[in-house]
Image 1 (cartoon, helix red, strand yellow):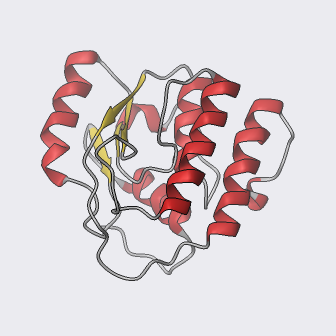
Image 2 (tube, helix red, strand yellow):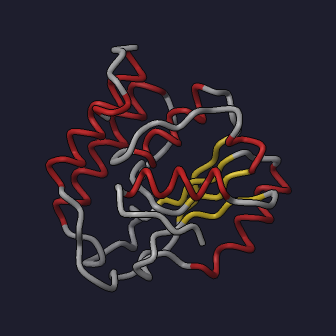
Length: 174
């Protein structure tokens, strides 16, 4: 556990990834939506397939009311843009659950705050890291939603277009 003052989801996640020790780093939101029972499967897959990063796809056919329709649409739109612009076969670019090999974190520099999950997936491709997406079940969250959809959506679009077209947008604006 890494404690720090609240400065945003991406800042907290970046700090945790940098501070983590051990061969594998697991990220998850702390709202009970992600299945911690998948951790052994993620580690086994990383080892067997010699992967650098696994991202977990919540947007499966089984997903129902666990996620609001507006979030589903936004996630679908962002993932579609990433598939079209980068050729990454991914369906969920805003997931909070990743398994990252510790050696991979030194090979790419993560910069964003609101759009860090998307940046992780894009930079895995740009950095020639071995990435795979797997489907996971997703549960109804516990607690209050703090996501600002407008601010987050703009950050995702800036991230997607910035890295694809080398727009040179400052990470502070992402």
